[in-house]
Length: 379
Ligand SMILES: Cc1cc2nc3c(=O)[nH]c(=O)nc-3n(C[C@H](O)[C@H](O)[C@H](O)COP(=O)(O)OP(=O)(O)OC[C@H]3O[C@@H](n4cnc5c(N)ncnc54)[C@H](O)[C@@H]3O)c2cc1C
Image (cartoon, rainbow, N blue to C red; front, side, top):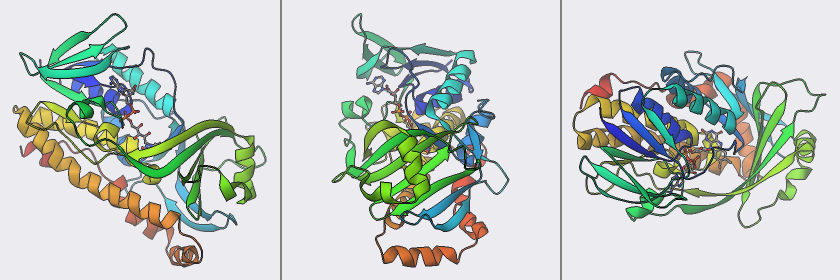
């Protein structure tokens, strides 16, 4: 049975462990934290990610709430600019939930999957060649321990220590900061299945419910040069009231990672999730891409006895997809933060588009399905 070491037990690491185990791998996940605490805030899961979770048997169905659209609003006035439906063409839904709830269902699936062992309190320190492939050293409270396997998967996030080991490019500050809040829905407002985004000059805010009890997630992207709410509290009174009711969760300076998929020198090391391609949250696709990576990597490894070929195929399949997502992120960054009068031209152009035509713009993203057939079996 082939064996893999997964470094990091975030969304990427846990999904990769499940995807590999489903193809008969023995997996050991090594996580730096001593406990998997329910950290983070809200997360959106688009149909492309939900399809993968479904195939891996992760029971996400009743976690969080279903969302049907993104409603774009002018920040200062609250005026509706456009509605973008978020279901896929085949009717697969879109869910919004707390990251901790996603991590919990992934952990439940990991615990009941045969062939996955979890090791907490282990910090990746270094790696070298092993008798069967790769040998990694982890720091623990009791001193260093090592592990050997055919393959190592770096799922250790934006500040990946595995990437540093290979002297790959460090994360790049983006100039943007995310201010995050946990709020409660206004009992006077009827429950909405929409994700709302308020757009303004150099800032935008996103709000959505994450459970039936009316817990709300709010994230406001602001410039690093002025990492405050600034004018946002004077925007749409509905948004301002939500923020006033909210508990601040802190601020996240946002960094990005130039995509990388495997280690240099044909070492049996692959990168997934933020360790591979941390991106700005403007298209809500960071975790979704981590989930796609996991499935495609496992499918490539399952389709080829040659690890080197499988990793090359993984890169060949993921790089163009990521490139397209990053273009979309850059597009949103430009158009969401336009100052007046440019924003008025944007709003007028969007007002001419029907919801169906706006949805068609995103079909390539949401309709993606984790095909383990044609493209992967060509190896
Ligand atoms: C404001 C904001 C909003 C977002 N909204 C969305 C959204 O709506 N939809 C979406 O899809 N994505 C969203 N994202 C992105 C998403 O949160 C991330 O892309 C995703 O969580 C990354 O998961 P990961 O497992 O790759 O990394 P992480 O969650 O960072 O996990 C890495 C794990 O590795 C461990 N680790 C680190 N170093 C070591 C080491 N040396 N040794 C051992 N273990 C180690 C860490 O403790 C951690 O558990 C958002 C991000 C932000 C900042």
